[in-house]
Image (cartoon, rainbow over all chains, first blue to last red; front, top):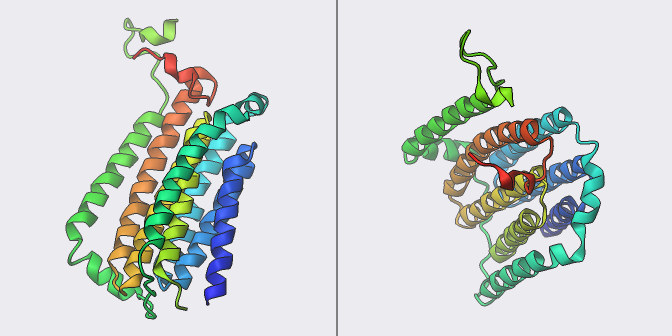
Length: 176
Length: 101
């Protein structure tokens, strides 16, 4: 099982890197989906099959479909030419250096400690459900509030702006 | 099946740093939202690795909450991107730096 973990981890890192450096938005989105699948395989291997399924269903299924629909709606044909000049080395070398320093610190902290082998047992959905609806019930309700707020916010932001509120009151932004 | 815990955390750290780099480098707001997704996913992976190291379900519960939060964030963020594209006809966030209220 160890070799499967390393293969899936390499696939996740490579596809995420390709997502960052790809110039086409749709290619980048497809690389992100591959990365999510690879992370799902990693979760399955380390003994969390329930969230591995949730990752595929919700992240790669629902959220990525939202991205695909928005990219189709926006019709970004003229944006592609402008992106060519944005990837000069002067622009990406500073942020990459900062991220690499952060990563080097984390690698140092992780390798300075003695190793800790992960447990053998698989955590089944029964344990997750029991814990979620006893110990974390308040957080579940907070997540429900957050989802309701997200639905209302997305509906409010997505609707068309009214041009006429009343017969004599035109919206000022529309007159410009 | 004995993957060391450090290597799982290390994978999460590498993915997080890649997402952070993407967020800092790109000026296209769709790329930035996708990089934020990568970072949230890496944080959730760290929770799951830590939870499965002790054989507890707490990490998976936290990942489910992160998933709900990511879904709400993406729906609002994509609605904002559509509004921004209607207003500026572009997804470049440098165009949005001149907005006045």
